[in-house]
Image 1 (spheres, helix red, strand yellow):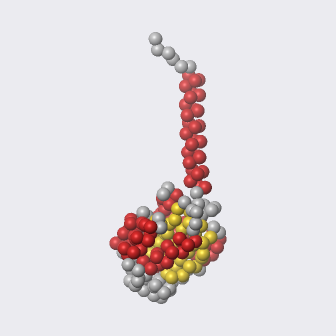
Image 2 (cartoon, rainbow, N blue to C red):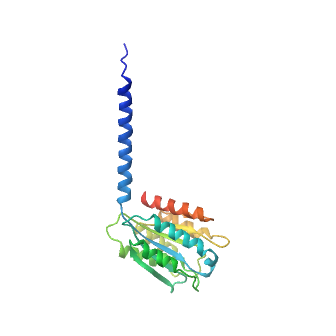
Image 3 (cartoon, rainbow, N blue to C red):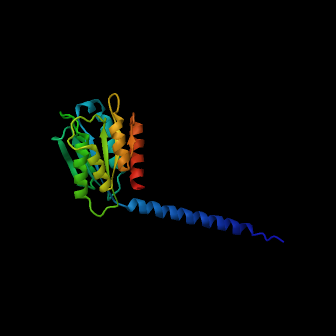
Length: 214
């Protein structure tokens, strides 16, 4: 003879399981939010980016707004090897970052993407201690012209220091994806090529999610 459980017991059991699962998910999300990350925003300000700078600034704003309270971020702009500038040193202050983002402007020089990432990685390693994750976000059209550092050396450095590079490919006409895709994949990051402001916001959210899931 089969035993039948009263309906109220079955409902109680189902409710209890749901509550436990929800609490577990909340705990996981809380742990994820409490993890601190250190990273850098590396922005190509060469002449080929001129007509897309409004889109670039939108992306930077979106990402800063999504940062956690304890996340540390710095801002670098670059053109050639002699014009790589830390516009904002490592900070958790969103207002400081936003102020510097508003003051980004186009500069002369032949683009040195590899050198800029090398310099940003150096600064990131020196400035971030006892953190769970390191990353760089590069915004560029991929038009590499004048770097002194070789690509294999950069890739080895990023791997050794466990720095993932996420790349936002933005260009007036066509993004040169070959170099950008290799850097992203080899470092454990990813290349995105958004075309519109809504896509930029979506990409910023996806990058944040991927950084926190590493």
